[in-house]
Image (cartoon, rainbow, N blue to C red):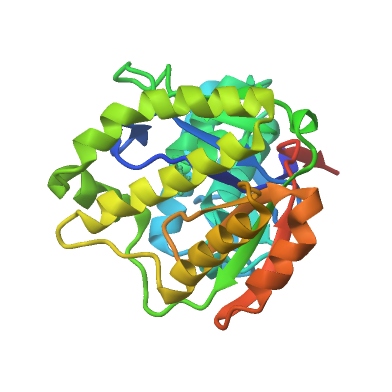
Amino acid sequence: MQACWQATPNIAVIKYWGKRDDRLNLPTNSSISVTMDDSLKTVTTVRFGKDLLEDRLILNGKEANPEELGRAVRVLDAVRKAAKIKYKAEVISENNFPTAAGIASSASGFAALACAAADAAGLDATTKQLSIFARLGSGSAARSVIGGFVEWKAGKKKDGSDSYAVQIAPASHWPSLRNIVAIVNPEKKEIGSAKAMQITAKTSPLYPARLKMLPKAAEMMKDAIRRKDLEKFLELTMRESSNLHAVMLDSFPPIIYLNDISRRIMRQVHEFNLQKGKICAGYTFDAGPNAHIYTEEKYQKEIEAIISEIPGVLKTIVCRPGDGPKKLS
Ligand code: PMV
């Protein structure tokens, strides 16, 4: 009863921010993302065993803290219930990138856990089931169980049975798309996304306006993806990122993830687009100062050079659209 799976991060272009149920991680709005290739990845092994007295999680070689273990147990419990087994599990999970750098490690981590646990439990799980299992660990992980371009449908049901991810298009639909990840020096410790989105939902007067405009933005985004309309895709991506960080700043106390380096990257991207006379690159930021710059292969080298020169940019990593989780032997 053992299985090993790899999963990769996804970077949202229509972001999830706000929950209608904190325990089940049910979102207030539907979101859209691109699952990345394995330039960044989590590899997770799960073993269920009669000999195990407690669930255990080893994360990057260290015993996980109670909060991390608790989230993993939620996923394991859901898998055990579906597979009708009672065995405890031993989970060993490794990221090939720094967990603390805030580059969607929870998405790849919980997607890999959902796939490995379901497989180890002998469950012939559907993608929908896997997405729901992963969601229980971290909302954004619901999207990482699928490759390519993905929509996580918010759903309406109280039990969350209609809140899972579906594919908009496979990675092969737009293979020339790139995501240049710029790892930025953080200035101070960030507030976790779970707590931060609660504060926004409770206190931001602009947040209801965001929720009202998102369904239309999501439709336009899906249309831009289907037509591979780079300019529209990038404009919508940048506008959505700024809208998210605007409602964060509108929260009380304000939630501030972007720093001077992030803002410098934003300016440089606009400068680049101005020089080219069209939109060739577009940034997006999650709950941290690191930038994800979407572009196409033909502009990759130029963008990388410009971004790497910015003081405070520690490293750039180039990702392509990826095929989703994979079983390892
Ligand atoms: O990964 P979570 O469930 O903590 O949520 C993070 C949400 C964002 O990354 C900020 C946006 C998104 O949709 O991925």
